[in-house]
Image: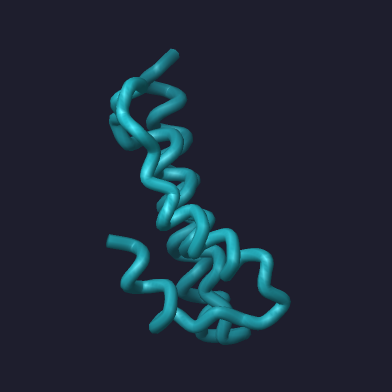
Length: 81
């Protein structure tokens, strides 16, 4: 069951990344890449339940995602590492 969930979330993140590249070409908006990173971080990355959360990425991502303006890949790319 865990392997199936991991495969599902990996496929979802990969598909969302592909969609981000297409949407950025068509509409100039790369917000989907931020959603893909959030999926990968939340469902695929190991985490220590006792460690303090680093909310810096989430805060910047939330500002970009909630903005009505399109977000260029040049703005999103540095956040994806």
